[in-house]
Image 1: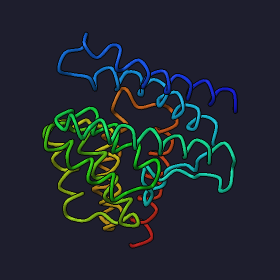
Image 2: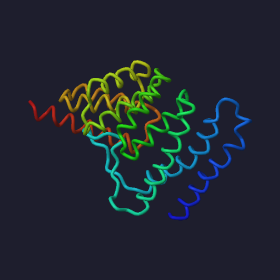
Image 3: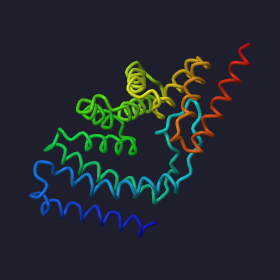
Image 4: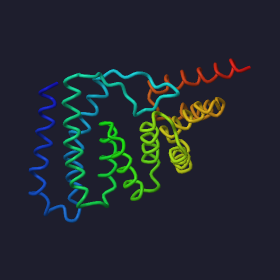
Length: 227
């Protein structure tokens, strides 16, 4: 793991070395190169952490951004420090290029991973102003809002989920969140309806489908228990 991480961070360091060299060739979009060079190692680390660190199955009251992280694990601690360095570097670049929506989205998701929620929400707000009709961005923003509020959805987060579903009625994450909102409200029939729509989404992976079936079964159990 150490050598994998070292290689990734070497690539990140190379990115910042190359930016001044390639900047003349990328015109008025220097963050395009930054996004590519930072995004590749960041994606690799995220994939490793997703596959290498076991997470609990998503239950109706839990959110997809709330992943279990083993406390004190040295590799995780190193990753978090590296994420922080990447986030701080990207934040500095965005000061000079504040209209780069992709940069703000990447920064917001990195802050969420670091559990720096106040900064994440600010970055999501900046990204939303630049890309107001992106259902994935809306769903991620709503998720971050609820996560920062101890899993509680406020009116803004609910509105974001509803807006995402107006734009894309089959958006997987928005449907999952909508079902979660309804489940917490004890509107179990509506929660089931949202999760059944989610099961019909062709891109849904087998693991997520199994989790949604479990959530539907729990909602049905709640309905039977209330009779």
